[in-house]
Image (cartoon, rainbow, N blue to C red):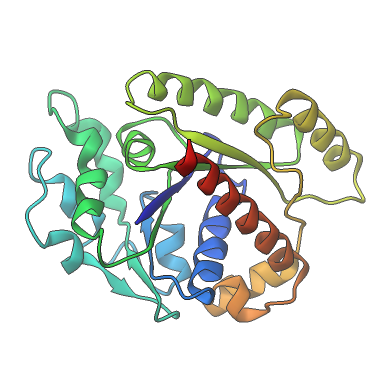
Amino acid sequence: MRVWAVANQKGGVGKTTTSIALAGLLAEAGKRVVVVDLDPHGSMTSYFGYDPDALEHSGYDLFLHKGSVPDGLPGQLLLPTSNEAISLLPSSTALATLERQSPGQNGLGLVIAKSLAQLWKEFDYAIIDSPPLLGVLMVNALAASQQLVIPVQTEHLAVKGLERMISTLAMINRSRKQTLAFSIVPTLFDRRTQASLGTLRVLRDAYPETIWQGYIPVDTRLRDASRAGLAPSQFDGKSRAVLAYRALLKHLLSQQLVAQVA
């Protein structure tokens, strides 16, 4: 199983949409995918029709065992989605309480890595939707993953969020055995605005080695897919955004091959 995390320390940049779009395209290619919602807001969980405020069990249950993960628990928490090849490890608002509980508890940063290890043979890919702040949940996402996708909205303030994310990644890499590869993905691009055009130029100039050279355009079909609870490629496989996500997936898979060879 390959594990990808989708993260940025700024909200509203398209993390959940990117996670689900990639999962849908991998499923379309015949892969078995588990999507992991680590954001207490539960956007991914809500996307697939579940209420994160009402779920009796969620990913929060994984953190209740002092850093260990009981055998079989991750599999018991999985929920079906609108795509039979995609399973959901849901979020709940209880995840927001972990920051208060985590001081003094060793091993909480590896709970998701240990949980996914139990699902290793059941899935080809895991995609983790991370919360937009540095804490125990983001640390779990980055510690568990082999590849990081950083969506960045093409507007000025999002560039500042990217700088914080790169700083966080440098800190995480100091404690990892292997440096975490990452790709910066420009999102919500609107070629009609100077803000989008200017920000895309800034990103390409500042991060020439790590930015994906494409972009995800603003596309109302993404919102329609969310309303229907379907992965974007299921809803409209020929929309502008889905075509862009297909190109992004091709890029990520090529990056994965490079990392495996290295």
